[in-house]
Image 1 (cartoon, rainbow, N blue to C red):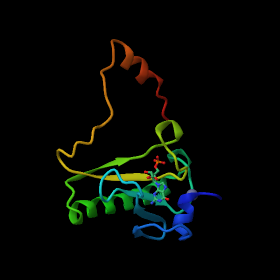
Image 2: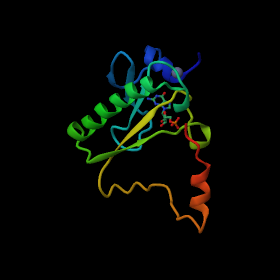
Image 3: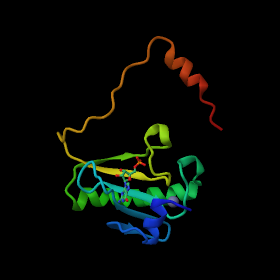
Length: 133
Ligand code: 5GP
Ligand code: ZN
C-alpha cells in the first residue's frame, strides 16, 4: 500500500520518533502548529475512526495519553489540543488515521474555529436525527 505513514512506521521515510510500542507509533509533525506537535498512529493501517476496532482505538488513545503527559511534564506546555481530521472534508490529507497532539500555552494566540448558537427549533431537529446503536 502506498501510504506515507506506513512508510514512516517501516523506517522507509525518516521521522523524528517520539515513542513506539508494539501497536502504535508517535512522531513529530513535519510542519508543526507549535513546538512538539506530535502525530500518533496505529501500526495497522486504517484510514478513519470508523474503520478502526475498539481495541485499536484504545491502544492509540493509551499512547496519546502518554505523549500528552510528557508534553506537560517535559516540554513545559500547559496543555494541548487533541485533533483528528476524520476524512477529507474535515481536512484529512494523509489517509492513515492519526491524532494530532498540539502543545498549548495560555495566550499563545491560536484561534479555535468560530461558533454560533442554534436558532429556534434547530437543536431539536438535529438531535432527533442521531440514531446510535
Ligand atoms: P491531516 O491534515 O491529514 O490531518 O494532517 C497530516 C499532517 O501530516 C500534517 O500536519 C502534515 O504537516 C504532516 N505531514 C505530512 N507529510 C509528513 C511527513 O512526511 N512527515 C511528517 N513527520 N509529517 C508529515
Ligand atoms: Zn498507512
